[in-house]
Image (cartoon, rainbow, N blue to C red):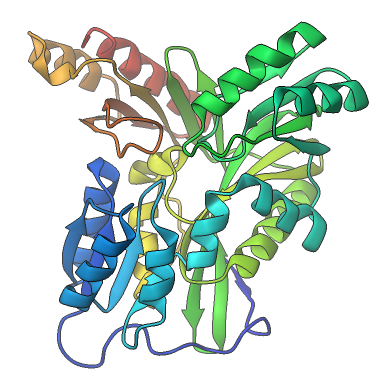
Length: 394
């Protein structure tokens, strides 16, 4: 089901996205399989794509933009030189996505949370920030236990701990500051709220005839598993009230960040109550399930929205996936074919073996198990069976 909200009153219609004549040129910042998926999505729409791995050196990136003069500069990386994006956005003829402000806030959990809670009034778990172990201890004394502590800039689960007593403060501080994507030496501490499940609501901000519009994919449930794995499934059923609240929260944060493309809005759900947790202005790992569940995957939606083309978020089948980051390249092991044969013998299954994009640490081999089924419960069981077979690739 495709769901669209008109948001034309929040900003005026921007410039025409796709040039009237000649091929569209896209400079894509990123590495790994997810960037290749996105590059392929742009390529299938007729764009000339140049993929760039140098995205943290501002001077080098600005020089590349000036020499290549792309129509679009698209970031698909966990960290990037935002000053170079700002400089590129000031150039005539170059559109930058996500917007530099969205990229900056995606790397600044403190700024993002203050935007969501203080400026937009979105519901969140009670939170505090700390810049030292002593400050974290003071927060714990004030807020009480339990507390979830994590870096202000990290992928979900990275550097995260739960404080249950005073003795946990120092280890949690060390874990958090060592685990974030950036050495910001600041952590966020959240009160533990009762949660039924976590949801990724892929929200597509695009341009319609009357101005910006927002589209929603079916909610994606997810959970962090053991052995550095992530499980997700689509759809995750929400009550009508919770679904309305989730869409309202997603639309408000996405419209505040601006730009075009896919935004992975992370939410916590308890009954009819929904709390904002995080947002990433690009495709997310939990959204890899859309490679099989939707008519257009999260990568195709991202490319279409950025180019200003029509999108739809139609789900064609319930499905599930299990993603595992490997310590060694599974393709280097012996007897790969028999393992794949066992995995793919599961009904409606698929497998991907590839290198990650480095967003959760160094580029590491990744094993992705996918499955579809008439309902998400069966799909999750199938994906687990596929993943179980693939664990022999070590």
